Amino acid sequence: MMYRLLNAAIVLVLLTACTAPSSGAPKIQVQGAWARPTMAGAMGDMAATPAMPGMTMAGMTATPAMPGMTMPGSEATSAAYFVMVNDGGAADALTGASADVAGTAELHETKIVNDVAQMVPVARVEVPAHSHVEFKPEGYHVMLMGLKHDLKEGDTIKLTLQFEKSGTVTLDVPVRSEPPQ
Amino acid sequence: MSRTLWLKIGVGLLVLAVGVAAYQIIAPRVEPLPVLMTLPGVTLTNQDGQAYDLSQTRGKVVVLSLIYTHCPDICPLTTAKMKQIQDRMRGAGLATQVQLVTFTVDPARDRPAVLKQFAGLFHADFSNWTFLTGTSDQIDVLIKGLSLYVERVYYVDNTPVPETALTGPAPAGPYLVNHTDRIFLVDRRGNVRALTPGSRTDVDDALRLIQQIVQDRKEGP
Image (cartoon, rainbow over all chains, first blue to last red; front, side):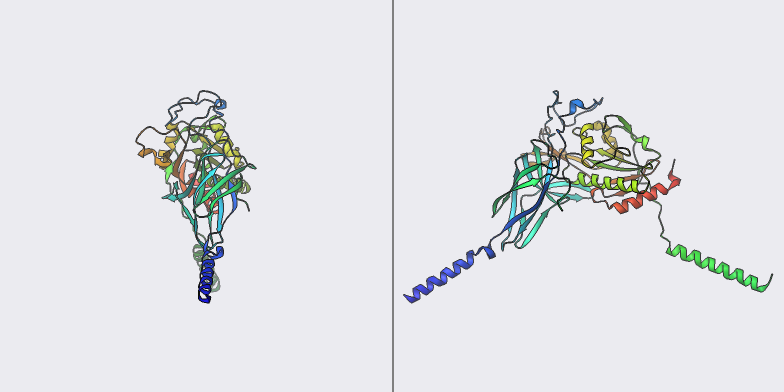
């Protein structure tokens, strides 16, 4: 009987050790988030723009005819930045994002190859244990496309980040031209 | 003439020669900047919808950058650098000798009013900074003349596809533009004399080069 009790106690101790959150699980915090302001209406103010003879809409199948009508693909874009801090003992990874104001939100990395700037979609960004990863200009960012309205300095948007292990984290993100100090 | 006088003259010449040699060793040598290419003459449209001929910048040193306003990451950094250059030029008393020009490589979406609003985000001073758009053909003259790489990237089923790899008509959704990340420094005759790495430009380096071009009166009109 004593032997069985001792065995059970050892198993319990081992189980507790294995599931202790301080050593074996990621602990994600997201800090210092901000998003860039955007252009108003993109093509929405075209009616007020002086006409340019000979102007062609390359790649466009239709020209906006009505004031306030938005040309497809002309919706504003923005980028969101933040720092992901992992105080836990296991790695996690950011795998996706969404925002209340954007039709599409994607994880992108800016790469400059032979002086050409390009944005490359990335499927996941790992945040190692006891480490942090920064999303910042000229690096990783969440690209916000197809914005439903313009973002002005002082606005706040809701950004939801999807992590592989930690689930979703939703942030209130201020719109500003410069990163918070 | 006495021997003492000759001796004094000899010592004086020696000191002079040593001084000249020392100056040549110590003084910073400024290599003349090469002519890399020539700014094409083309008539574009400024942020107020008025015609703007690039040749009207002749006689001024030009700091030229390229952007598209849907660019979320690189172009705001480049434009912030241009703003720093504008402020530093004013501080150095060079505002009347230097013209800043920013043109879009996405003229279909960047109409004059859009450019004006983009400029406003960076508090651009239009007294010596002009934002330009035009027809696709007009912008192509600049793209070719400055040997720029510019390519639209569309999204097909959430996958980025470069314009050249599209198999059908361009999708109606949003597109990005991959583009050269450079700032061009142009002398009074329209010759490009130096390049800086666009969004990654070191403003102090750029200012040194601009001042060198401003002081190079031999290249003046």
